[in-house]
Every structure is written in structure tokens, then in C-alpha cells.
Image (cartoon, rainbow, N blue to C red; front, top):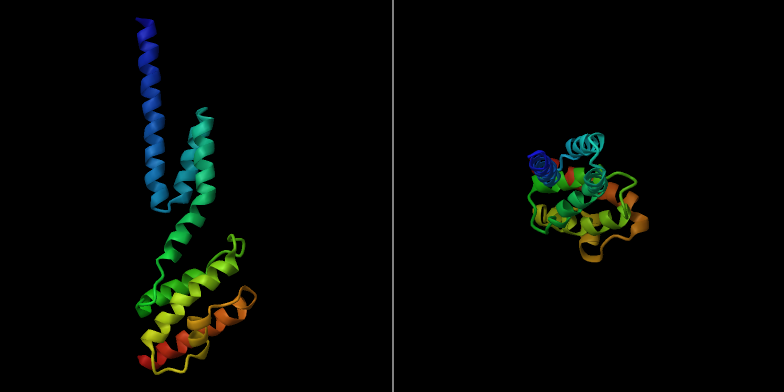
Amino acid sequence: MLLDAYADAGMLWAEVVGTCMAIANVLLQQGEWMKVRHLSEILSDIGETAPAKELSRRVKDGPTEFTMRRISGFHATMSAAEVSDAMKMLIELPHDFPRRNAVIGTALSPVCISIKNLFPSSSISMCSYIAVNGCPEHMIGQWFGQVSAEFQQASSKKR
């Protein structure tokens, strides 16, 4: 009877840990990194080191994957609000983001094409150039600022 009680307790404990991992998966999909980090700490505190380490690893990699998914959604027919959100996201991209300049350079092409489509009669020379030729990594800082200024100027004229 005691053996059955231990077995039942073990099964229930596995269910608790499994439920924690399922909750963590949902939180990761929602970008709730701090909540997942907290769950990882709780699992570690109760002696579940393997699941805790797995969640810690996923929290570390999560923001990069989440951001890359968002950036991959940039397209050439974005609305002005979408372009504004994309520009804000790129501006706020952490400096230690993996391959930051390459990511921004790649993301600028659909953003610039969208700006050209939104404001076809505006003088947006940098956007026109990047839309056709792309943006070399070593010019990201300078050109990104220019694209941002062109977008702001074209947006303010259209109002």
C-alpha cells in the first residue's frame, strides 16, 4: 500500500512538472520571458533542475526567435502604421542582438519598398536606393537614420 502511495505521488509530481512546462510553452509563444524565467527559478528551487535548465535556455534564445519571426513578417505592402511599428522595432533592436546590422539591412528592403508605395510622389531617395539595391551592413547606422527621417518627413506631408 505504501509503495502504491509513492507511485501515485510520483505520477502526480510528474503531472505538476509537465503542467509547468506546458504553461511555460504558452508563455514563450506570447513572449512572456520574465514569467518563464520565474517558472524556471521555481522548478530549480524545488529540485527539478533539468526542466529548469531547459526553460532557462529557451528564455535566453526566445527573444531572438520571437523578434526574427516578427521581422520575417515585414512585407512590401505595409501600411503607414505597420512601417512605423517596424521602424520602432528596428530602432529598439538591442545592440547585442545576433547579427544586428545584417538583420536591419535585410529588414530595410521591404520597409523601404512600403514607404515608396505609400508615398510615391515624395522625394525619398534613400528609400528608393535601398528598395532596389539593399543596404550594406557597414552603412546601416547612417542609412537607417536617413530612411527614418524620410519616412517622418513624407508622413508629415501627407497629413
